[in-house]
Image (cartoon, rainbow, N blue to C red; front, side, top):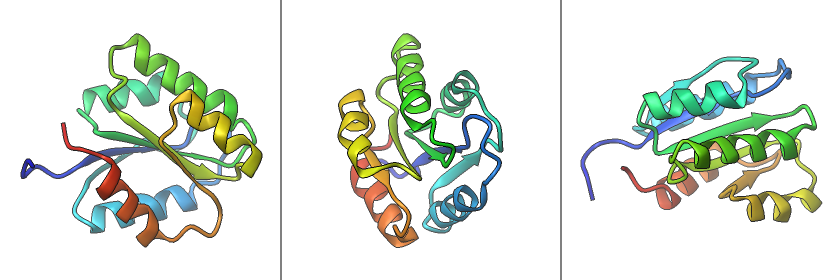
Length: 133
């Protein structure tokens, strides 16, 4: 195992303006010793992937509360594949119906955290599931 900390890009794709959860998760990951880049609100999937590649990220965490999770996660994963960066782990959270989670996993989303997930749960999952580059 390498000594370098995990690098995670936390992003808010689309038009959803509610970023409190994303900021809480970003802070929890940072406090757990990870390097975190928070991209801010209203990011396109292209901007998110570009940030992840530029930052040499090990993972991308998306926060989606708008109901557009199927489209946004799919687009991020598609662009990662196009950019030969499919090794970047994609996870996320937000208002995602349980019925959509298996479909997102088929697309390549590693994990979806639904409302009520604790920051401890998220940090522990990232530590266990994401391998530093």
